[in-house]
Image (cartoon, rainbow, N blue to C red; front, side, top):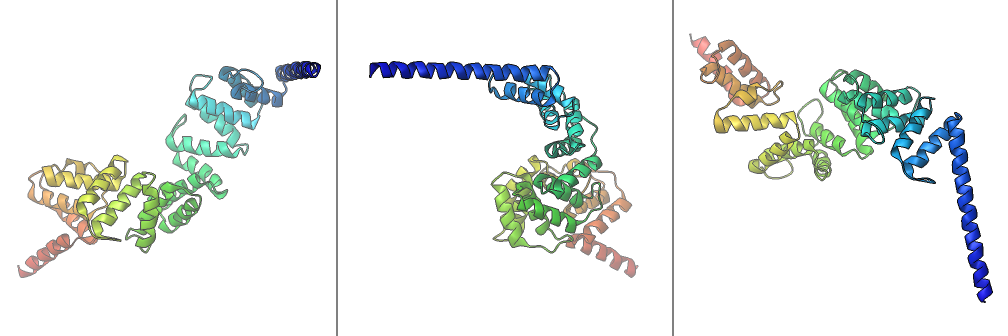
Amino acid sequence: MKNRTTMTKILCSAIFVFSFFMTQTKAQNLELKARTGNVNSMYLLAEEYYKGIGRLQDYKQAFVWYKQAADKNNLEACYKTAAMYEEGKGCTQNYTNAFNYYLKAAERGHEASQLKAALMLDAGLGTKRSVSRAYIWYRICAEREEGLAQRRIADCYLTGEVVQEDWQEAVYWYEKAVNNNDTVAMAYLGYILSSNGAIAPDYERAYSLTQAALEKDIPMAHYVYALFLENGYQGEKNEKEALKYYKKASEGGILQAIEVMAIENYRKTRDISSILSLKTLSRSESYLIIAREYESGELIKKNVKKANDCYKQAAAMGNTEAQEYLESKKTSKKRR
């Protein structure tokens, strides 16, 4: 029995030594092939260094070999090189180089690189910002069911950036993104379906989508939920609670919510500057406030023409106070 145990130990040791020898030989052969210019071996060697498989993990060496393979047009290596440049892993962070390697792979059909190129063009990261160029790559990605790309296509149709504003098309692409579980798309689709715009409102579905997006703390979901609270959709009105959600949405950069908070600030402080600083206005109340201030000349220089223009804009948006004001002006003119 003792002899058998000893033999087993010797056999196990022999297997271990043999395995170690074979692993070392394989590693040496892979490195030799890589050094003699075999592109696939370069990539595999980089993978081993990156993951710490068969050798000690070494990001610097991984980067060296990924880059060499990338420079010989290995698409996966291009993507990995770009990612390491983007993160500054194993090299000095360089967004320009990251974008160039993503673009190199994207132009040769590498799918993950196409989305990264779109995102960097969209953000102006490592390259001059170009939503039109980003749109082209997003469209390619969207056609193969990339949820994030579908959402960005929808965003463009919603705002009229790059393409003509078209809420029907926006809904089409948001729906596709929602089907790919994009929670941001859920919030924006909820926004469209709760607005009195080009699409008939569907408050029940909008509320359902918003609840799902609220769980992920999506700023637009905060805004849409505030709308529901302010107007009493799907429940009783709660303007105080609505204001809390408008504040959250404004902190998340939602322009419509920033406008609401600017109006609230005006009510409290009579400071109109935050309303005037907004590039676009979506609420009739904003136009009504500006109209009154232009008319009175207390906070801003009096300007009757601008006051009338703002009253008309507020009235066109359905503001009853502005409509009554303009009607009263017409009546007074007739009497004269």
